[in-house]
Length: 468
Image (cartoon, rainbow, N blue to C red; front, side):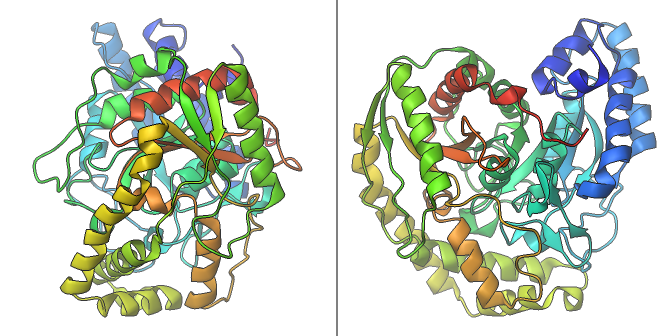
């Protein structure tokens, strides 16, 4: 296997190759570090790269392999989004307002290390993970590997660009309104927003008052399932806990889903948001593949409630909380300070009412998920936007732009149920398009099983952006 094939082999395959001694951890790491050095100056996926530290980790992994240790990610390089703590390094949050280095790993990082993964760096995000594009005054713009003039999405755009370009096989991501699924759509990747409480956010009990979850961006469904098996599970202090799965997620990804009843809809959840033709076409392509696989596919528009009264107060109050926690809030970007100011006006009563509306939303959507196992929608209603679209724009203009990108993703942060973005069968003018699969509460298993079936038909993992 040549170096390019190895770089794009994916997390699960690389782990297999290391276990089989077909490639050493140092050889694998060198492949990815070479790509990072050569390609990342044009992408800006990474905020920081730990080359020497990673080489030490690879040498240690080889010692462990020689001693007969078996860990699911032993010797495999990964990246983490720069909004989770890594001991000895500052957590940037996409902002110049960050503080100094932290003493302890987050729970996600601890579990990745325990599984044997080698953390090679931290990836970029917009300030405080607020927006669905990855551009900040402090750390610059992250570009889409498929077209450098287009956005990689956000807020996990650094992770998305890094995985799409083969800089790492997988990277952590977070999602408080679409921030896993939107970069997945823009970069041609698999992006699962897990059930709320599936992955511990500790040392944070919760984030954005229940909207945010943690996951990954990967090239294949098997990679996503492996990552989830590695990091999932509760920790002391968690505000929410998901129901335990009946079997490992990797096993679900390997198991055919059987014949499912599937709803398909391109109706926007927010009035007046235009769903562009490329997004509709992407959904139609996936619907055709699902029919060819024997599933019962029905056009059905859910009775969407207005997500805004439940989402926006929690989002704004969460931004205010995050801004308050920064070491130097005076260095926050102007529009971030404006949004934080709005969030400070939301009192505990308003926050409580916003969370109570979540139950009403779930009840209004309940008939759809009683009748259908999965709902299929666009992930975003348009192709990846041009880079710098919101340069110099104020908070209101940028907020409206974000709302026009995330109408299909935000409802499921509010209800907490899992949703997964997969690449559409064809590109639009050389750019990926994403299609979202929404599952019932606590049912990532069905989404992974169905997505793996789609992947086998569509073959999106074989597609690569024109970066080499």
